[in-house]
Each structure stands twice: as C-alpha cells, then as structure tokens.
Length: 435
Image (cartoon, helix red, strand yellow):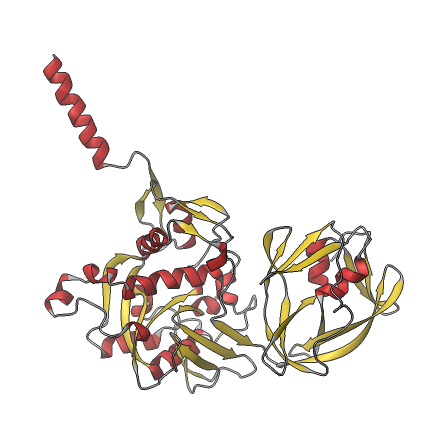
C-alpha cells in the first residue's frame, strides 16, 4: 500500500509540473480557443493607452512599448531561434542588417485596450491584441519604408468617418517621422475596402532612423506582424517588399509572447519614467498649421478678463480657442474650482488646491501667429494620466509650449465653460461643466 501511495504521489507531482495550476481560456478574434499562462505577471506604473482607438489617432505609450518589444526581439538575437526550418536550411537564421537599420512598425488598429496601473497578466495583453499574430521581418529600401508610412497614415486626421481606415496608422520603434496633415493624401489605385495605394509621396518625412540620417537607398529590416507581411489594411508595400526579398520571413514567435519576453527584460515593471507618456517619435502637423494669436476677453464669474489665446481653424473656418493653463489657474485661484499647476518634465494639475503663481501669468513666450502641432497631451490630473485636447506651439528656437482647449479644462477640472452671443465665452467656477 505504501509503495502504491508513493507511485500515485509521484504521478500527481509530475502532472502538476506538466500543466499550469491555473490556465485561463481565451477565444481570440479568429475564434481560436487558446490557453493563457496565468503565471505571467508584470506591474505597470502608468496607464498604457490603447482603448477608444487611441493608437489610431496618434503615437501612444502602449505603441512605444509594443514596438520596442519587437525591435528588441530582433536586435537582441532572440528572434534567431524562431525562424522556420525551411528558412534556416536556406541560411536565413538571423536578421541580415546591422542594429541601426532595424525598425519596428505596428498598426494602431491592433492595440485595442488600455493596460491599467498595477498588476497585469496574459489576460490583459490578450485584450490588447486579440489576434494570433506572429512576428515577421520584411526587408525594405528606405524609399519603400517611406511609402509604407505614407499609405499607413492616409486616413489621418482621425474622425468617426475615418476610424476604420485609421487602423493602419503605424506606431514605431527605431525611427521618427512626421505626417503633414495640411497636405491631402494622393490616392492611387484602390486597395481593399478602406485604403488606396499612394500615387505620389508628400505627407510623410522620416526625420531619423536610430539616431542617424534616413537613407532612401539603404535596406532596413522592418519587424512587424505576419498580417502586415501578407498585406493587411494599407500594407500593400509590405507585401510587395516581402515578395521581392527572399530573406523576408514570418517566424514562429507569437507577438504576445515576445512582449512578455521584453517585459521580463524590463524586470517585469513598466516604469513611468520610461513609458509614462508617448516618447515623441511621431509628429502630426495639423491642417492649417498656424495658430492665430487673439486678445480674448473672457468672462470669469461675471468679470471680464483679458486672455492671450491662440485659435486654430478647421476646414470650415470654425475657430477653437486654446489658453495657457497657468492663466486659467490664476483667475480661478481662491474659488471652488481652484487648482494647482506643477511642471517637472510633465504638467501636473491638482484640483481643490491653491495655485502658486510663477510670474508668467498673462504673458506669452512669443507674439503673433505661431506654427503648431496637434498635441493631445496626457496631463496628470490628481495623479492620473488624462487625455486633454491641446496644441503645442513652437518658438523661434524650437522650444515647445502647451496650450489647452478651455472647454476641455472645464470638463476635466470641474468648472463650467459656455458661450452666448451676448456674453461671449464665459467661465463659472461654482458650476460643474454643462457641455
């Protein structure tokens, strides 16, 4: 009996080691049932933004992390053991360019959920990417890479009507690029249901690749997904480049697994200092790239106050006003809607706290109309990352200053902003935002 008991215990131990103690079942977007490894665990110090189409609109910190994981996978050599047997037999068992020519691209439509502050695991990443994507490497010339980004950005700026087509917008690692939205995308042949091939290039400028000058004649290794390799969304140039270079390959590595490997490389902690906000890899130059200086009289609790504002115009000529947050804080100081403003590399707003002036109130660092970019900055409001509608104005030395949409401040900080023909723009500190 003792011998039989020992055998049974040994068998139970073997089975316990062979399978995870807990394994969540997950149905991916293709209907496949997969088993998630519940032992995977990491910690996030800041919200990683993917919900509400965030990565289809602009660069996000989640897009930065995701593409960094893919580029690290290639540059570190970890990718080498995941090439298919046929590729290895043909001598294709490593990335065939130097590290400074390796970039990663990931379409924003495949980042679908936020990762909240705190502990997270495989289930959370499966919500971000509910597809069984594999890592692919595509070799492109610089000219092809530029066209790929041009086509991927064709539906910007994001709106309800362009949301589906904006799925192709590329988050990146290893390069920086600018999209000039003041220029129309030159549509060529239709490609799929929502996209067009580029008839000519003019919107996208690649400003650097891994800290070096971009070279249209150079060959770059683009680390991405098998879906882009096969020409998904606007990725016709990916498909053409992959077909033209026999070293281009789809590996056996599952993208979510690669992200976990990278998280382990980070010590299983996504630090706010590294990924608390987008890192400035993508610049969107908004249509009508001038912000117009205005001396604006705004009623604050029944009293007219002169603000220096900047207005931008949409395609129909409608103007939206933006203000310095310190100017607003100074006028609301001592009211029910008072808030403090701090800056330590990012802007922090704290409601219910008195504002401390710094002497810049009511002044501007420059005068006249200024070039701007649509910023949509994430500002800390009571310690939480909050998406606020902003524009970034540039001075003559290339410095940047953030101006906020007044209504957005009212909505997020708890005071009312309105407009009538008789009163003009008005602010009410003792009323919640009414919309």
